[in-house]
Length: 432
Ligand code: ATP
Ligand code: MG
Image (cartoon, rainbow, N blue to C red; front, side):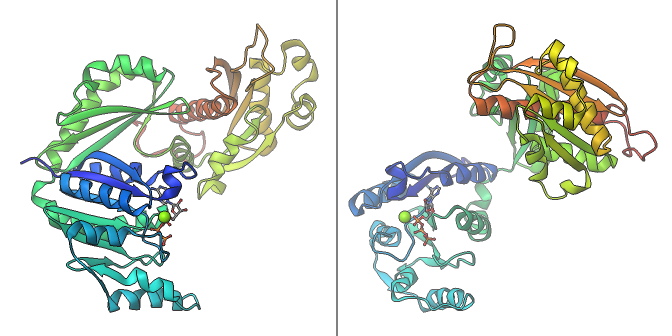
């Protein structure tokens, strides 16, 4: 049996005027795909009644499922419930139960619901209000012909919470017999360009509709190879996904940094915690970004000791103990200086691992010898220090900096896997 066909509808003047970007649709599509529901079309439409009515009516006429976001607020221009009623050819009625939920939401915050909010308790005949515990606007579920419409608030956090709590259970009940489980595997790669990796995986990526699909997404040079496998049961889907991962690993070689959905920083933090190891940073061109991505994560205090942004040469000398004559002889962007930064960070903070990053983020400051994008890295690991240089594509200052942080963290992750910290309990099994 073929699975349901879904469309996603993003509603709001701000989206079509370009003052806000539709991120809801992409998020919803990923969730739906994970459930085994294929999304075949996105529509972004303004709040203008005629446009909204037409877009919503057409989507519901084409699809088995429409998930809409936005236009459920209390004001005149929030017309999603009206458009839904019009598409179904039914009237709107005031729903006292939904109103009670809205009033309770305000009361819990010491406020009273306004007259305007009564609009939000209107429900098309035959539909149900989806209670919103995260905001004021209730969602809506309504059958329109053979299509089921779920309308959710536009605010991304509310939309996501309501999707998980109100829509997913509904989808399972509606489409259970037609949904095939989907199992994902993610291989995270650092080194090749997206195009080069695409060429390497061309044969398996060509199968866009088969039971096992492979896609690449790129984020500042970190490439995620995502395998999605479907089958009649979860075990078969998992086996198919694993078989594809086994087939791809040899093609990725050393450039495969880690596997799974975690971010690289999360993976590094988890590995540090598992080993009871600690890290410190000395950053020049990344200006503290490496320290930031690590400390963005809860639990960082257990493993991240501290970092220094040593932007000027005199800070590299004074704060990290880099010999002034080394900078003089080799330049601030050089492997020996990167190594001295890494060692200096580890020693000054008393950490087992130290990272040093020094480079030319651009757009200015490049030379023939060291063009923009030249970045040198140092890694001090368990008493020994090594350093290396990369020519990062000078796409933008931001790209060079973000890509540099990935480079440093990937090297740290590799070093963490090499051997356990002497004198400290290692991981249960060295095979990872
Ligand atoms: P609420 O009553 O909670 O405001 P609503 O359904 O009326 O719900 P909107 O007024 O349309 O929501 O949007 C509220 C906020 O959510 C705005 O800041 C808007 O930019 C944001 N938003 C709306 N739609 C999207 C979308 N598709 N992607 C990302 N953000 C969105
Ligand atoms: Mg709106």
